[in-house]
Image 1 (tube, rainbow, N blue to C red):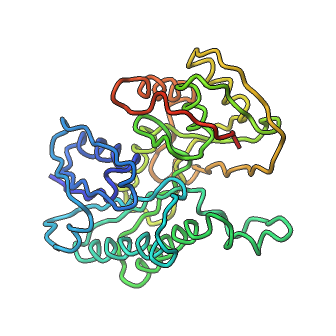
Image 2 (cartoon, rainbow, N blue to C red):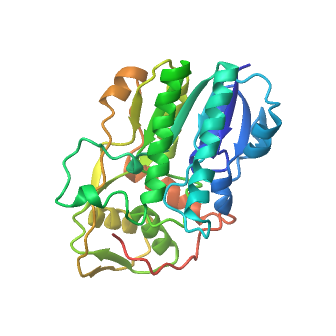
Image 3 (cartoon, rainbow, N blue to C red):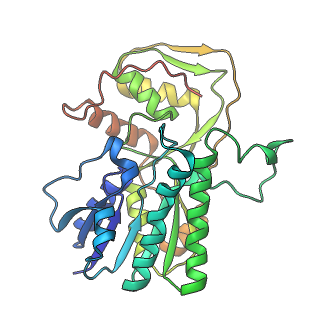
Length: 319
């Protein structure tokens, strides 16, 4: 039986990866990661072959036994508010990555990093005037720098030690167990639908977004982890939708009858859409769940008792 370490098992993506690997007969070391503790996600208790551990304690003890694969996915999906001093926050975010790479080298295991794609903008993409001076000093700069550093560390570790690595960039995963305390458009719309608030769309709502259902994301990471490809790949949906049409879709599926209210326009960036042509070529993956199907399933899940999501008021506007 193969053995996999899921670092960040109590994150949204990590919990679904525990599902996917366990259902395929893996023995899973489900290791919780410090940055996800503010909103830990519970892995279903009825799944076989899952052992729950705390990542820091596991790495400190060094008693992991045989490990065939490591998936590092304990990153927050968006910058978290924290009172931690910046230098300490950067150290806390990045030090487990080096420890996991060292463990992968020792165990001769394949290690895959599954990280949010929006922190990995194309460095060769054209910039707006003055943008080259602002990307490293904005409100999310520390968060973005930590993500870039970790990808660079993966590449450098592979070059120096020959470690079997893979980098999967995840484009806006959503679905059951998704965190509801982030400032993402779809998350805000679902919160407002659950609490029967009117939706607020900034400007005309013509900005575009792209989302990928979590089961598709988990399948892509699973296939990538079981390949030998060293390249960075995109996992996401090429299906784009405007914010206004997304609001109408959530209204239709939730049947709550709220109004869509418009507020004055402010600057709102277009987020990148994945290019999974290489992903399809390398691992034969493409998303299969439509946005309508995925949002309907997510809304049904959030309405269930015990999910802790319904009735959470939100005054946040949609950007």
